[in-house]
Image (cartoon, rainbow, N blue to C red; front, side, top):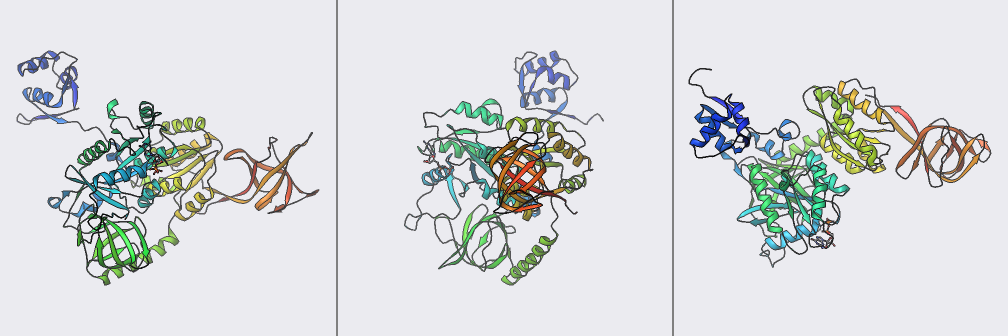
Length: 593
Ligand code: GDP
């Protein structure tokens, strides 16, 4: 280092005298002396803030820089959509825009009531006769700052948007009822927000109730990874009562604070883009779509391409139903004039002419058809390839298991796997069958779904087929871990797919000595085949997987028994049938790659 070059030392926001001395290879006494000379009396273990420490360093001939803790968001994962949108904008033209908020949480915890409470206390009645309309979003002003709320609560909408790459919200407000605590959908919502790297503020609702137990719920939230700032964590938890209208101002305050910290920008004069919030056909007005402008300013008369629709904006309204001529960043606007109904989450862009918009749409349609034909399955293997190619820094998993007792050890073991540079990121781990929501989250986050002792619900399977999401189910923990390890090492064997060929309900059970248990069944779907595999299910739990030992219809041995018929069957190695169990018959096929 040359003489006139000052060495920079990185410091945390709070440090002790001892640590500071160590960093500059000096003695604590020396540091204490400098502090005293500056009027600060301190002992060796005293904590000093960054500014004070910087003064000490300056006197000792160093420069201080604030150590920024490694935020996960910055290491891997998604870049917020607005950041990608403004990538091409000249930084000089960027201004802060209002934050867009979505409300998530468990059913009945008060999402709708909260949205109504915020709206009613903060929105001046619409000029057009005091009627405000629901167009999928609204704006309020708090302390002279605008906040945009998406008012279709629930993570299905949030994730559907993300699945189309259109992350609409900048901040998630997670509603948790203080008398009910963290529930499955609360955890799901946390997983969705985390996967999208969107900051979470908790609205602890229903604090007016006698059985509200905020401390207990705070602990539950901390266990779920949302540690209250009162406990030195970084989640703001605001007690509210949506019903009694208390705490709402505090919540809005918290939103503005987080928004300020996130610095959400846009260029009002830039390229006009955004997302569809909702759209429908109105009998008298034609296609009515609510768009959320995310960059630029949308104007009546503009030609736009929206999802697979296009048109000239014939008229535009705000959420109060007032006709408007333009809508800037973070403004929801209802527009008329499209030639088709776009989907929520579809992006829109302004074009030079309607003709150009039509060309874009046609290209999009062709591309969509092509991708339908060629979209590859998201499998462990190809996720790994992409991880290796540097496209993804982690392997994202969604894990479902039958009971908490098996979920925990699996999560712990997965977190312990250190096969390579690549991190395993468990986006969501929960008990219960694999649902559509899980597949949706996987699709939106490029993750795969692993099940332990659970099956995928039929709608989830259907969605997985169309979204090309891989669902792998296991009955042995070791196998599940082994597959993930193999995927990380890039040596996974071809994926096998189970094809269900039939299902039967157990109506009666018999026991024959020396032979074992026989289940008297009725086939309810497809057929039961003598030489296929079977799984015995009780509710959602897999009791046993194996082969049939015999299959009879009346007294005859059969190769298969079809829907509507009764049969008697035995399963090799399984004798614990109960009336009400289900027998699922399946074959195993290798997935062609
Ligand atoms: P959502 O399913 O999350 O949208 O929940 P809702 O907003 O529909 O509310 C579910 C129920 O909880 C309704 O009966 C509300 O009146 C009630 N509720 C919502 N917020 C509060 C609150 O702060 N206090 C009390 N006591 N009840 C509330």
